[in-house]
Amino acid sequence: MRNRILHFGTTIIAAIAVALLSPFHAIAQDEDPLWTQVRTLQVKPGRNGEFGELQKQFTAAMKSKGQSGRSVYQEVGGDVGKFYVLRMIDNMAEFDTPFEPPMDDREWATWLDRFWDTIESNSLMMMRRYPDLGISTDDDVTRDLLFIRYRTVAPGKNGEYEAWIRDRLVPALRKGGVKAATFQRIQTGGNNHTWISGTAHANWAEMDEPALGYMNARDRDALLAAANALTVETENRIVRYRADLSE
Image 1 (cartoon, rainbow, N blue to C red):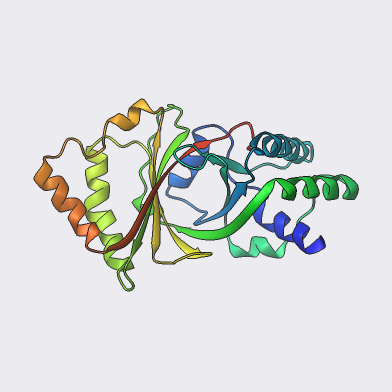
Image 2: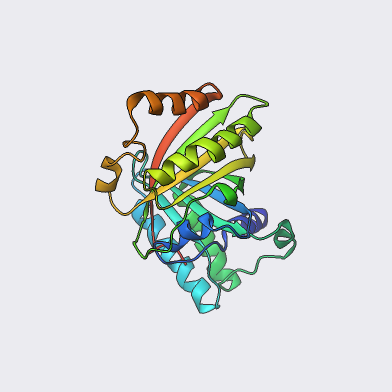
């Protein structure tokens, strides 16, 4: 149990701001931190409600200790039992600081036992942010839906793919009116040739307006073909920010 407590504590606690726009907005800013830690939690079938109540208890305990920072997302365009807990990392030295549970020993042990009983599987990965590639605006529109794209490129092609994002994709997205986008690459816990990009949306209807819809078919196909030539695997997901479970 002790190892499990320490493992949970050092990987899932703290993250980014709590306003609906803030989590994505914080990632997109051209400033530190440069690392994003993501804990993926697969909740057992039929246990979403219990999992959510436990997260609320944890959030309340953290706030009572004057601590904050965790951001929780739930998959809505696929497996609705899958949750993602994000933490922004300023530097790796943060891991040298021991975690202090927000509850007393007995409450913490009880909470952890209940929590792990709702979990079917979990994994952890660290992503490197590329803030110079991101898109962000200062408008106050709430965007709590994220369209996430996983793109794994061939070995040795990370540099070419990054250049394609910077020189071709981002300018096209800006021209298409995209207000918020972020680009990251897995460093640990997965294939480090996998890039994860996200575009934020205010609602589902906004997804009916493709960012590249203004381009004619030939130009759009040429733009995407350049990336497809480098890509060996793709996957898309849609997640929603859960303000009620975040801090």
